[in-house]
Length: 364
Image (cartoon, rainbow, N blue to C red):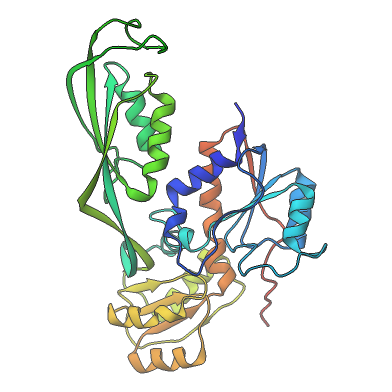
């Protein structure tokens, strides 16, 4: 079974919805087309000329990057620029930036928090809320598990730490297939009565389209009967950064050492405070602007990738420890987990993490 760009795009959209990206961002399929078949994919934080060459050398015709290969409007397209090279060589580019930063459970900040051993994480700052829909679909008896499992795999039935949530009830379905129909049950022109299961599941609004399309593909009916109802009872917070607690209270130096080892840093910058650290905030990449939220939430330490001088002074004045582990190291942490998720979903596609791209930062 072939895998197409649209399949990979839709999967990424199901775990890190592109519509949740920040307003300034440029995410999604930025080069290529959805109907291209895919066998090999290269993943990299950025797409440079070297990365295009690496993709070509391994036979990959799709690159998934974190930072957008096209961010500002292009005013010219020269032969040595990366978008031109991608198009010329027939290599597509899907870019998942702030939507992947904020993705629940598998995003950049979630991977960063997990790497340093944080527990009980909560949003550091709420960027937006993703409200839910309820999908009600009627399935012939015996097919409810297949349909429900597919909907779950695409993002339905998840709320907080619970997954696989749904409500099933039995009843009788009635319909009369028309002359041009191809009914799964009954015959054209006959009135049909059959046992059906009413399956109800919640799904974030951003994932509704993906879930409905997946449901239709496995539903045995030619025209599945389903309803989509807006549900204002629950919502999911889209978080910029996370805050949580370490396994045990630790010192500034111990935390810096944990960050260095868990992220594979050659070196990092940190400030020191004279108390044990019980609460830690993280925001990957250039997250310095979220220092105020870390202070407001009572964090003892704040870990990010870029810290400016005036932020260091504010942190010192507020008694909060800072760890600057570098933009690259605080974001590159996402790719090992992302490759695992993609490889599990698309078992006929080979996914590779770049061997060439680093930030080239050295420490004396």
